[in-house]
Length: 242
Image 1 (cartoon, rainbow, N blue to C red):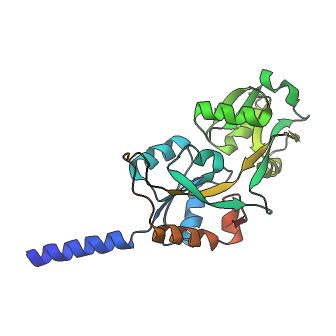
Image 2: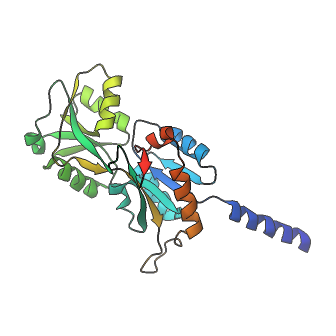
Image 3: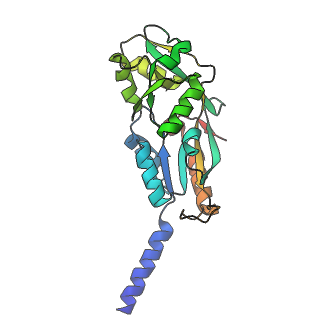
């Protein structure tokens, strides 16, 4: 009996030792979360990767499981102050991408944005999302929030909003998928930070947050991300790390 218990404890210890570091990913795009998760898991077999399609799901599981790392756009990472950016994604040498207002047939009049309804993906909590959008469009429009990027196009087609706020990369995908004449309006302050890797830090106040990521786990995560091929990186909206 004692020998059986000892074997069980040893196997349990080995299981914990072999378990990969947990990495949560939140990057709203036209790619399905499961497709991103499968691609990342295949390329990073040593990591336990979960990709989320909704912010609320991410928030709930971060509180419960305290993953070692979160991959998300900088604006999203700021909602999790216990996760400190350790590596920044870039595309074409830049750490930011341009967001634009997309509309049908004619460019949206940015000067009238405060009197308009704008479609957005709810990538932040309500108050933070309001501030995020206002900073980009220099106004305070009424926001029609959706969960998925693909849900923005129907808002335009059925004239539920005057325009939708999207990245220029998504504009090209929308133009491929829709027969509508989609046009974009540039924004003077439309720069948005790309995906970054945030690592769990020990809480300064001693709160009930998981232990800081170990140097070994952090190195494993960063090395795995740096080894991703171009196709997999593209699913995160980046082409390199710095």
